[in-house]
Image (cartoon, rainbow, N blue to C red; front, side):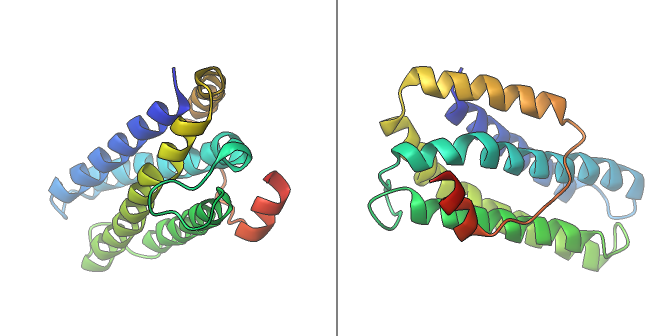
Length: 172
C-alpha cells in the first residue's frame, strides 16, 4: 500500500462521482441529492486526510517536482491548502441552491472545476515529489493511516478552512 496510490484512487472516484452527477436528469433530485451527498462528504474527508497525513510528510522531504515553484514543498503545499479551501467554499456554495436547478448544476460544475485543477497540480507536483523522495516504508505507513481515516470518516468531516501559511509553518 502506498499513500500516493490511495490518493490517486480517491481522485479517480471523485472524477467518477462528478461524471455520474452530470448524467443524472435534473428532475431526479433524490438521485442528485444522494450522489452529491456522498461526493461532498468524500471530498472533505479526502482533503482532511491529505492535510493530516500527506502534506506534513511532503513538507519534510519534498523538493518541488515538475512545475512546482521553489526548491522545496512549501509553495506547492501552500497552493494545495489554498485549493482545499477554495473547494470547501465551492461545496458550501452548492448548498445555497435548490437541488436540480440550473444554479445548483452550475455550482456543482464550479466545484468540479476547482477540484479538477487541484487534482492535476497535486498529481504533477506533490505526488510525484513524494514518490521520488519518500521511502516506500513511509508511503506504506502513511497509506495505512490514510485508509483508516477514510474508513472512519466515510460520512465526512466538519469542513474547516485553514490558513495555508500557518499550516506550512506548523508542519514544515
